[in-house]
Length: 194
Image 1 (cartoon, rainbow, N blue to C red):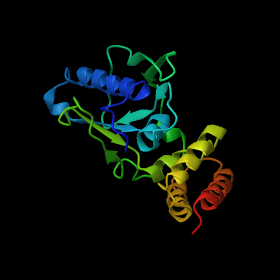
Image 2 (cartoon, rainbow, N blue to C red):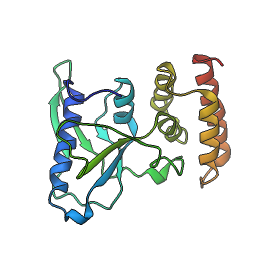
Image 3 (cartoon, rainbow, N blue to C red):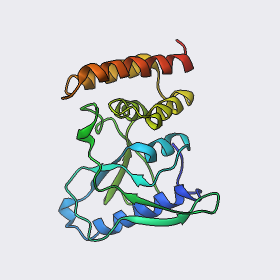
């Protein structure tokens, strides 16, 4: 896991966004806290590998939350360009392949200044992040799976098993996703042979 403590650019902006979210939650009734935040997508990949920043932070929460303001941070990326990250309020993990135990198997991360009694920041496991990429399987999704494999965070057998288990609860074109699982597993195996 990448530490957000010494980061510049995207990493620092992500930390600022998390602090802003925590500030909103401080206004909630203490009985509603803590709230778990499950990070997916490009931000999760960044936290695992240090690769691929993103503009939209895909995340779900353990409780229904209502933000009184936009959750976005402007920053300068490592090349000095003006950039912005924001919490994607339209992200919905029910619109793709996701294992039913993904939240339970997520990894809690420590972020300086974040009080786990208010906000428990969690990241999908590498395996569940890879599974979440399979139903869409765009070039970016494929590259994310390659990155996870190159960092030896996933292997083909585990990916196949987790994805096929997730597929049992999937409603949609199961045949197309089954083919994608086979393709993704071949890619991962070519990077990390048995």
